[in-house]
Length: 116
Length: 113
Image (cartoon, rainbow over all chains, first blue to last red; front, side):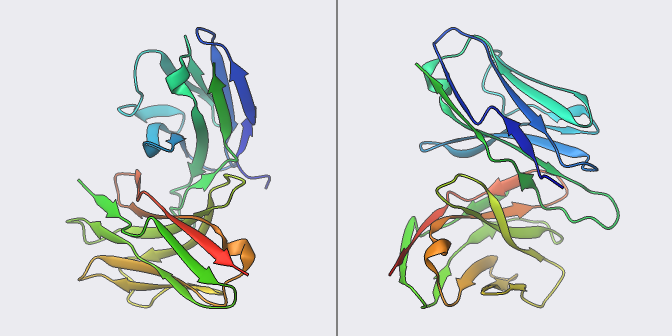
């Protein structure tokens, strides 16, 4: 398996622009997580899905952030409009809680977002 | 709420020597999982080792082993025969039935040649 795939790896945009981050989880995994990592705040869980349904979005900072999972193999995290304080590394992770699978989360390579 | 504490923001070790990274956690659950993740400069979060709380035996993965003390809520990571490639941020993480991983703030490990 190719692991969790994220795109783009790097994104530089201007304040006010819309940014869309993409994630393809590991096939067969039924949980998908979006995290944000900054020096100041460390790793923060933004939202997670189970079987494509958002379960907990309490970590989403504000209404400018939205996430969707239209099917089991694709998720997006959108920021509109973007602000400089959104600059961070955004990780997608997936896991499985099916019989025979373990509970650990597997992370994608991350998207480094810079908002100028 | 569950919390994970890594009291050592930075550690250093000489190549080929052994280093131990500390982690404590707070929980009222009896069944849970603990993990150590490694984040090298590439940013990729890599699972190093995991421990199920119901298992008394400490987990081992090659040069990596843990010292799990359930009563003390302690979960330290020992790296033996340290290599230059072990230099990274190491995150301790806790997981219970809530499905959320709770991470510590991380320990930056430097390996000196």
